[in-house]
Image (cartoon, rainbow, N blue to C red):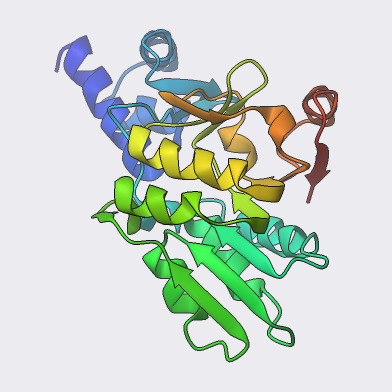
Length: 253
């Protein structure tokens, strides 16, 4: 196997597993760890992965986006804590937007059932979770369903969302950076998220620490547009402080 083919396989492994370890890759490919480190450095220079301590994780881009099934297997305890903390920020909100993704599904499941709520969502999975909640009204945005995320997009969804005024939006992002804001690989998804941010009085960003420092293809909001960021303790406190200087409260759980 030549070096180029090895790097292609490393990239596929990184995307399928969510992260890879240098020592395990070296043993699996039968090469030195330094060789794997060089491979990872080259893949990072090409904008395909991000190096982490002892390994690497994939970067989502215009040409690659992890599926919802893959997301349900990564960082589940952290995402559960993030969802529970995000719901604590609900306060007096009566209308709520929840976008697609696994963490938003956990938020939907954690919403209180002892009060009336109207939930607007582009996610079929979120709508299904809340469909049986007696005091919750679910408004599912119409449009084309993306197979990878089971979420609706395009002008049907945008037209419905543009006419709504929402108390609180729970939004996620494929990438979060201080320089480029909140990003996603797909323009159609970016349009729905952008409208949700613009049409909501309050916005809470939820995302695991692995999203920070990543930049996707389409920017849909700035960091200063959200009142709070809820993430896990994998985000260093020093980096959390840098984000808080841009305006939002940063909650690490």
